[in-house]
Length: 280
Ligand code: SAM
Image (tube, rainbow, N blue to C red; front, side, top):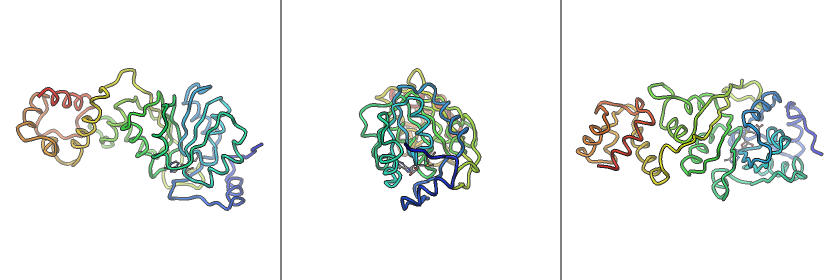
């Protein structure tokens, strides 16, 4: 029986030493120690009993164990082969609801045939936003996602137009999901302690699609072009896609000024641009 106190950095260190492993900065490894905070994160997942849950980056299983206790059917994606060995051979070897997929989640996640009910994870700082962007761009959309990320990344995900944190990443995240920052987590409850604070972001899938599946690719192309040079006007940025006369007509029909910048456009404005263009 795996009996480890995830709240004690010393215990975690001992396990790493016994297995001749070390924490790697490259993989953004910071274990979340505090049990009340891990329980709070799981509470934001809702009722996970019998639900299919994908966890990205289980580490040594600090959050995994709580989800299994609550009856989740869990598939965990871990890049670190040393951690993977501990999870498979020790921590959850008798758990029938636990499956481990070893490797880079950016590659292994999208090979999966079934989209789960939830995707969750205390994501590595270096690739957290890339993983989320991939999930959305690949239309691999569960009903809910609950991620622990650097606080500033969460703020960018939830930002609205005309604010400093707003970017194409905000729009990407909000295309299919309502975004709520659930709570912030001080850096002091991680081991090793990172240089930044974290937050938990809850992404709840919208009831209705903002864009049809057939429009998604063109939407992403338009979004990238609009934000390609932040200080330039949308009229300028759209030159990468359309002729000057097309741009003039497009902006006129969409009711947007030539001087407008992408940071002032809402998701609705961008969808309007997309639809107007398809009708030109
Ligand atoms: N879930 C654990 C916790 O909360 O204590 C560990 C979280 S730690 C911030 C991030 C985890 O993601 C590490 O276990 C790391 O090895 C793993 N990881 C990093 N990059 C990954 C990737 N591309 N695919 C899968 N796992 C990755």
